[in-house]
Amino acid sequence: MIWLDLFVGFLKVGCFSFGGAYAAIPLIREVVLSYGWVTEEMLTDMIAVSESTPGPIMVNLATYVGTSQAGIPGAVIATLASILPAFLIILLVMAVMKRTLDNRYVQAVMRGLQSCVIGIITAVGCYMLYQNALGPAFAGAADLKPLIVGALLAVIYFGSRKVKFLKKGLSPIALIGISACVGIVAFGLL
Amino acid sequence: MLELFLTFFRIGAFTFGGGYAMISVIEDICVEKKKWITHEDLVNVTVIAESTPGPVAINCATFVGCRRKGIAGAAAATLGVVLPSFIIIWAISLFLDRFLEITWVASAFRGIRIAVGILIADVGVRMFRKMPKEPLRIILAACAFAAALLTSIFAWNISTIVILLAGAAVSLAVFLAAERRGGKAGEKR
Image 1: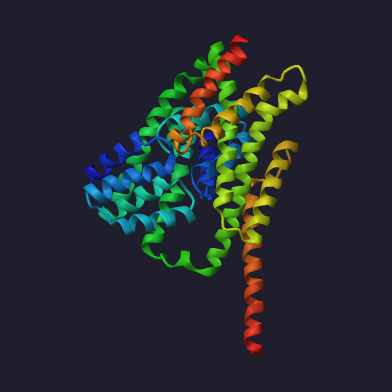
Image 2: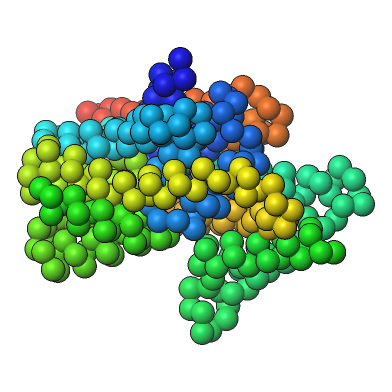
């Protein structure tokens, strides 16, 4: 029953996405891959699309996966399931337990969750780099292009923070735009 | 009610760049212009949003809507903020598959995938830098990092949720142990 699977899968994502938009990515990846709804590559492409369109990444990915599996009803179910926990928890916090969040035991649990989320996000980022940039280079020494593209993009992205007139450096959308151009040149033309 | 929905629809449609970009827009519209909530309210809800699951934007919309018109208002504001991205992504998903079959688009996305990896790793590292440097937090973050990475590479069957719950349990256990020791020391005195 795909509707129920979508609902349960994205409800899990919604319940555990502590710590902002990116925190949901490892969970979505896990749920989506374990059901075999979307390939790893497709998901990464979709993360890039979500970065470049308005709205929270989690909602965008839920909508996309839902549509791909069961059309508009699927999209509605997945999206609602992903936002339901956030919605209910805020209502609950406002209604009864404003002080609960200050409770020291709750705080201890939060500290544990937050620390783990940070580690997991970093790991997912590293794994994506490994797969898309390092992996091909290890597999066959002939294909060094992804590695070079990766190094080039990293230099551009982190280097841009040192450039004065850019202040905070390139935005994620700008990096995605540049990476698309680099990709066309490196993988398409060369 | 309609105003709540339309206002958050607009906020949802024009905020690129994630939750925190949205907060500054909500500040501008809901605090400065419409005076629906105060600045302190918004700061509070941001803090709550950080320690509860879900995107900050959703949490804020629910909060403002509930303040104005109760649960129905909360639903109107939340649906309003979600609807634009829902429509946009749905439209994109209709043609994305075919779009990706074009050769130069496929090349572009090979580059983009590497960029996405950089972006996500960077967010993780930046969050780590901002994290208070308590030994337990650092250890937990490092263990979670190792566990998640090894799980991906070797395709182990460890769920992210299990890692999260284990981290929460360890943190709580350490806190309880420290408190008990503190309590006993207090009795002796």
